[in-house]
Image (cartoon, rainbow, N blue to C red; front, side, top):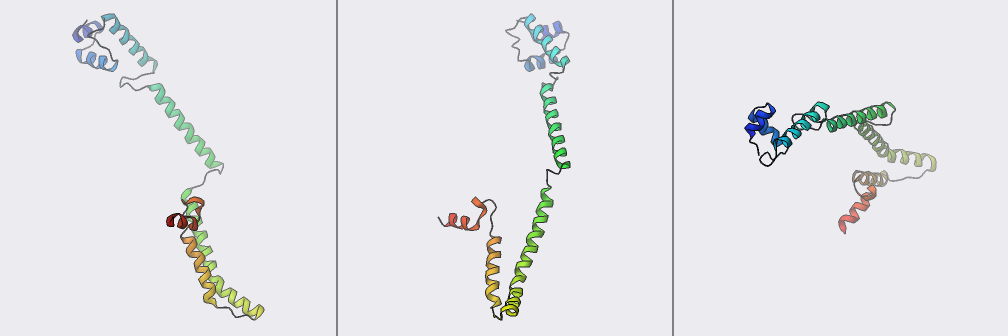
Length: 163
C-alpha cells in the first residue's frame, strides 16, 4: 500500500499530479498495489494518446460524434432550405397577417356593395346595418380564434369554458 509520494516517485510525477490522477481514475491507492496503479496510469495515457480521452476527463470520441451530428443536421437544414422545403416562420406570419388584413377589408366593404347591387339588379332595399352586423359577427368570431384549442374552433373553446 503505497503513499502518494511513493507513487509520484515511481511514475516520475509530483505529488499533486498523483493526487489528481488517483481522483480522476478512481484508484484507491491505499488498497492498490504499485503495479495496479502503474497499469491504470498506462491505460489512462493510452486513452489520451488514442484521442479517446482528454486530461480534463472529456470523452473526445463522444464529443467528436456530437459535433459531427450537429454539423450533419445543419447541412440537412441548409439543403432543405435550398430545396424550398423550409419556410421562414417570421415571413410566413407576416404574409398571413397581410392576407387576413386584406380579407377583413374586403369583408367590411361587402355590405355597401351588396346593398348597391341588390338595389340595382332587383330593386330591393336592404338595411346595410343588418349586413354589417352579420359581417362584424363573423369578424369577431375570427378574432376569438384560438389556434391551440381542440379543432381550433372558438365555439369549442367557449363550450369547454362553460362546462
